[in-house]
Length: 165
Picture 1 (cartoon, helix red, strand yellow):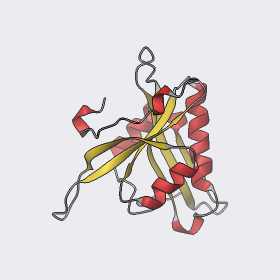
Picture 2 (picture 1 turned 90 degrees about the vertical axis):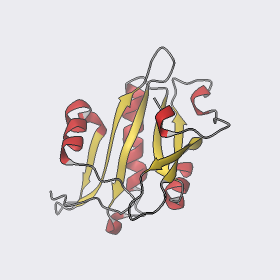
Picture 3 (picture 1 turned 60 degrees about the vertical axis):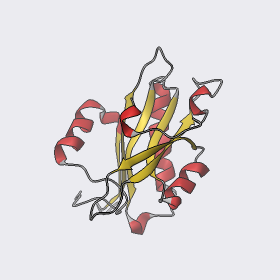
Picture 4 (picture 1 turned 135 degrees about the vertical axis):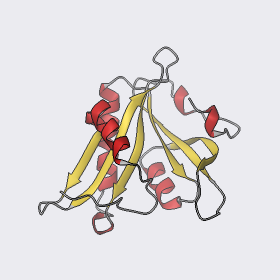
């Protein structure tokens, strides 16, 4: 299997050590979909993090990417479902992810998958080329352990990246 770059321009690109760290610490959260011919169809990577005592133990989606020729087949939904199942087995209260406010295609897809906007994070994404930094939505989906769905009650005000634990 060959991975030369991310499968779309909106997925954050990280250095090889970052990917290897995730693979070493959370291998079960690193899922690749490969076509019969060996082409990379898509991948998802994430981790488990947070405090159990404060009911913040959760799965986190770090990156989800599907190659253009394999889109609209339900692959992103399947990869998300697999990550949610892993988070459920690990006793997570919710799954969260960050998405650019401008990426309405992704925001709408996550909403269809049961996610809602928990909070807006101001200037979460660093811009290049002199463009302004971009805000992110922190989107969440409650898992079965959060019986009262407390983890997804939206915050009434935006936060800054340094305010995120």
